[in-house]
Length: 342
Length: 140
Ligand SMILES: [Zn+2]
Image (cartoon, rainbow over all chains, first blue to last red; front, side, top):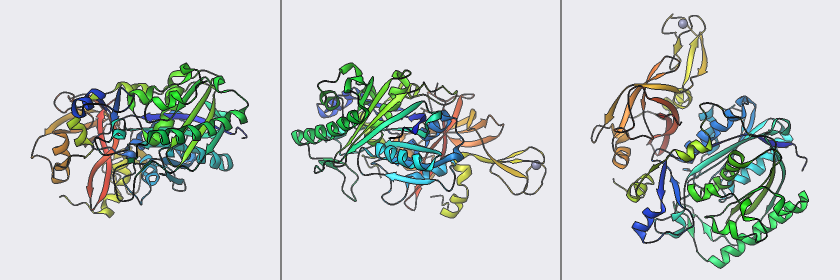
């Protein structure tokens, strides 16, 4: 890669509501997944509204003129529409230029990095800035174990020419080893399904991610432990911490997964935002790895130039994490429209 | 249900989504929404479109309890309970009617509280999601 594209700024959105795992234990007798609590999307929110707020924050933090944006790319598996662009609605809400390229990616829970990777290639050729957003609120049937960790958030970054960036994108790789998807949502249904064949899904997860990460470290000619901060997408913190036995555990930063939950196609970009905010120092190297069942994995290598300056009135990821209102399980079901009161 | 047609809703999107107002180049008046004739000086086509910042304070408010909600908000109220509507005085000096969100109307809302605009689902009509702005307590 020619190192032309970097991160100009980033912005986050996390809904206000949280539910603790104890609420699940009260209702179901157990909690499936290694997280503490998770965010819950409000009744008047969806992936489009979350994307608007994260995108607004990223644009302002980047201090760019929004008329210089050439593309907006959104990754989500939870669009309220099958046919209708999410990016179009978000572009209207943000007042983006009419000739902006609109891209929606919905293929899997790695759609956020699919959007980022595609955006990088386009901006490298086209110039200008790109707004990349992962926004998700995946949903499964209550009681299904995959549902326990499913949460909601959006994370956005503005990419553009590297000479103004807070961090360089030094390399990216993708791998699509065809495994039959064990996690999917059929047309006309609202709920994600997981076949829960643990040995198989671990096998697909491990092989796919190892391939992308090895390809990336080979290309960058560095060892895995030379990264300072690593985020690996997973449904909870178990798979990401087990996959690389040689990787120093202190480098894996999964706090957003532990206290916000599985945010689907927003997961990898949210992890990146958290590392850039809480951890990154000048010259640190970051590894971001996404995974989407049946679609593969992306790995991105990032080198930090500097911290993003705080802008008054634009909430930071830390402010969103600390703004929280706990709800009980009954309210949770109402918010998610899983109890029909009509 | 109060019916707002798609064409009518669409025409109002800039003000509904981003608080686009018309600043009169003749007298400086802010017209929200933008109008053909300035409401202060009466001049025609003198307004430059600007986006208001979406920050303000609660000037006054009222809580809509069970049965008080207009039909398009009845379902939301059933699921979420009472909600507050407010007159918000924006930093630019205008006062607008808004719905408040992300707060408990009984515990969290008071006159003078600082609020900011957020993009939310308002209601659904003809199976189309109508989005727009609500206001919430500022995040500190
Ligand atoms: Zn005037």
